[in-house]
Each structure stands twice: as C-alpha cells, then as structure tokens.
Image (tube, rainbow, N blue to C red; front, side):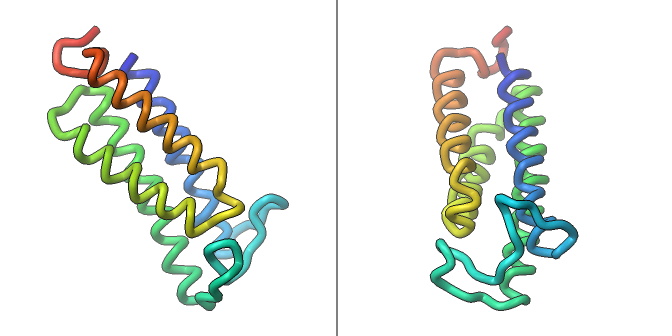
Length: 128
C-alpha cells in the first residue's frame, strides 16, 4: 500500500513540473499557457514573480518525491513532512487557479489516502 501511495505522490510531483516549465517559458501547453498573472488572472506579478512561482512549483515537485520516499520507506518523519508539502502544494494550486485546479483535488485525495493509511495501520512501522 505504501508503495502505491508513494507512486501517486511521485506522479503528482511530476505534474508540478508543468508549473515550472511554463513559468520559465521552456514550453507552453494548451491548458497551461504562459502568463504573468496568478489567482485566476486577478493579480499580475510580472515576469520576476512568475519565475519565483515557477521555482516554487519545481521545489514542490522535488519535495513530493522526497516525501514519497519517506512514505515508501515508512520513515518516522513522513507524516509531518508530507502534511506540510500537501499544504504548500494546495496553496500553489490555488495560486495557479484555474490551470492547476486538478491539483487541488489530487492533493485532497493524497491527503485522505495518507491519513486513512496511517490511521488504519497500512503505512505505519511494521505495516505490510
């Protein structure tokens, strides 16, 4: 179970790379065009702000892979670290709304699965 959840977290982290790639104008996508606005296009942060947000997307991608390793290996620190990363990812998805709206739901699913797995003993020390 832990391995499957970790794979979901890695996939979600990989999806965060779109925010970095678009913000740094490496590539644009039909559903994620380059722009310098955030919060449903209500605040223009300019090119520098867009680049900073892009770096945050990259950091979140790396952080999700790191947290996934903690889940898969059942490290003692994974619940706290993963909770922080999910919260940060949710904030980024709101900032990137509406393009990142799917990420909000994926974060909520990951949080629910991790909480259920931890509470039911699927992810704790000694779990199968």
